[in-house]
Image (cartoon, rainbow, N blue to C red; front, top):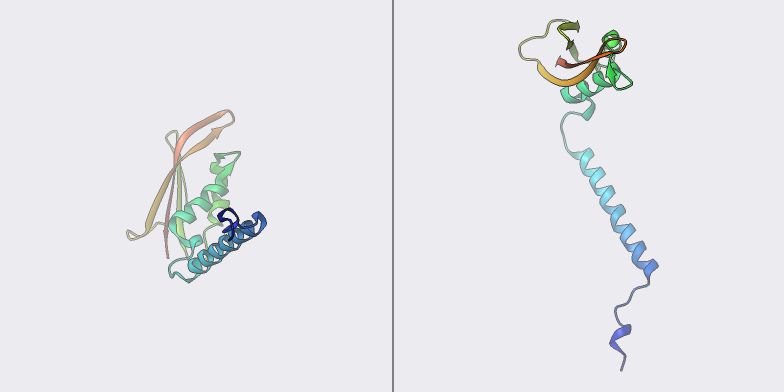
Length: 129
């Protein structure tokens, strides 16, 4: 008769390999499922466009109004945008006038008004096709 203490044991290396194989399977499944779900691509949603515009406006974590023209170039092809940056009672705007049906997204940002002068502001991006 065999002892019960030797039954059901697995080598540590084999157990680790099994865990890695199962984890890799989940990663492949999740990636395939993400590609199969219909909908807008992530880089063309209004929030994603706002993120892209925000990144292009920043220098050292602070939005610079002088970079608005550069920010307009980050809008994906097929979209139109109106970008407005406000801070300290001043407003900067680029882009055509948006229709009423356009999607509007906003974000609080820090804006450099002058050297050594940074104030809280708001970035608003209005996008439409």
